[in-house]
Length: 469
Image (cartoon, rainbow, N blue to C red):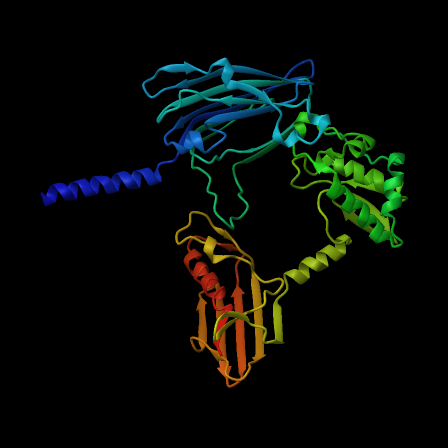
């Protein structure tokens, strides 16, 4: 009887382990194909064959149980070549017509100019464990311009990923592990693909915008930097940013008066509006870095010259108006060693009768990693930063105040990773606190992770001190 129970337990344990390690789904195939045509148009074909293993695959992910395809009918057309589900027993279930729903993409809302863009939502049918979804579609673009970025790795394993480029060459990656999504991950390098077909336009700032004269009069400041900042802030705050993929507007920048009157647009549109407003206000503004990235992660900037110094402004982010040199100096200061030595005031919070709490200050520039987000085991590396922090605080205590728990003394070194020292002592009516941390690496490897995690746990401890009165 014991042997039978033991066997059952082992089988159950193995089943639990398998379930924990098995991915929710797996791509048998992903294929992208790009073809340019003699009339200047192009065809982009996409095919996916994905096998679903667990319930989460068709209830929790929009790219598995459902597929969303965005296109602009003004110059793009969508053709569904194949769409069906192979059930576990091999039965083929073709997706019915009512499972194809045309709708307005969420990123196009609040902007009437973009209301012509469409999103085809495909609700896949006959989903069950071990079924395979097959989808093949083509977008025909009456344009010779297209910029693409993607990563071969997905959030579930990929057996085969093919890319067939317009120039005829092919790239194939096989047996790709799924991506990992954990806090404080470094930027993911490798398996990235970015390419361009055709030539992006050169974006030129409009020299005037008469329709905005009344607004500019209301924003006017005596100080030119303050005036420029007020114009920039108005664009950031009042012009709704639509994050639609720029391919669906054919990488065009809308006229500034149109963006101004509709109060919405892409980051390209907002950049053009900002430049036109600054020019109308009398500042010689130009658009710079106009092809640095069409994806919005490195958006273009507007440059103006004030009192002989050049300043660059973003139409999507606010902040101090600084020259490039001043920005570099600010970054250097932010990364410099931190040394703070000062007296703290006795300003406690009451916990209960006879007990109060002092919370140590949060200083600017210190490393900010919450150990609550650092699991005991981890699949990826951690993006940290080299830091050297030293804090020495003193505090005069009222008569009768006693530190609960006694003195604190934490001090150790973790090989070449870093070191920590936390000392908290009460000497009569005086509290002495020393906290120092040194991290010698920007990127924490899996081998260093247990030590780094312990450093962060200890570094974030003893920031709240309890006193009895």
